[in-house]
Length: 186
Ligand SMILES: Nc1ncnc2c1ncn2[C@@H]1O[C@H](COP(=O)(O)OP(=O)(O)O)[C@@H](O)[C@H]1O
Ligand SMILES: O=P(O)(O)OC[C@H]1O[C@H](OP(=O)(O)OP(=O)(O)O)[C@H](O)[C@@H]1O
Figure 1 (cartoon, rainbow, N blue to C red):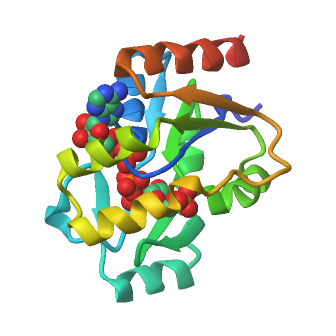
Figure 2 (cartoon, rainbow, N blue to C red):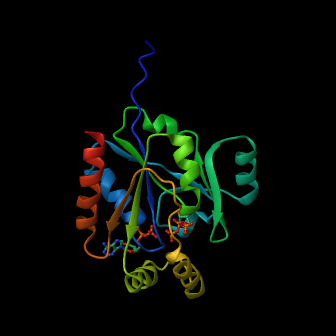
Figure 3 (tube, rainbow, N blue to C red):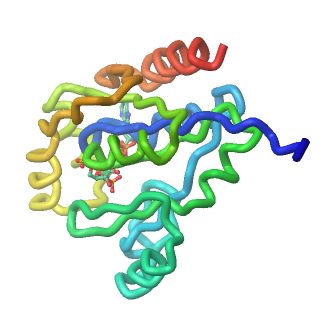
């Protein structure tokens, strides 16, 4: 016996910009059964705010990728994003590790993580536009680019996908997410 703690699933939270992925993950980490949130490495300025991430330069990101630090990495919105292999440590003894992923890496993630659940967060397009404007992290041109990506579908071939509507109150989406995560863990 090694005594290693059992690993919780990786729970990908995906969906268009402004849909509430980061808000939902933070709320779930507070109310969920031993849920943890994975901190991403992003080539975004440190002062941009929003999610809790590790800001790096493009050169630093390339070096980390070259050294095999990432379990997954991708590019979007002119930025590079990485999920460190440390996620495996986070899974140990947890009820699941929540991670904000691009829809483009989900099939790869399913391969890499094995025990893998997707929460596909949705909201009406006009709600997305309002929320992105209110969040204020991007300028108007970047908000438009993010909205254009909103219609991108999920890839086929994912085993466990649950749709969570976050058009209304965040608490409703949290309850809907818990209702799908908890039976999965039962
Ligand atoms: N259910 C909700 N009702 C109202 N505002 C919300 C809700 N969910 C998220 N928001 C707000 O919408 C904006 C975008 O949310 P965020 O979590 O950053 O989305 P994403 O990570 O998907 O881009 C934030 O200002 C956040 O506070
Ligand atoms: O391929 P897609 O599914 O469209 O996703 C593209 C990127 O958008 C999100 O990034 P980020 O969290 O920086 O942006 P957001 O908060 O505006 O969604 C997501 O985490 C991906 O990195």
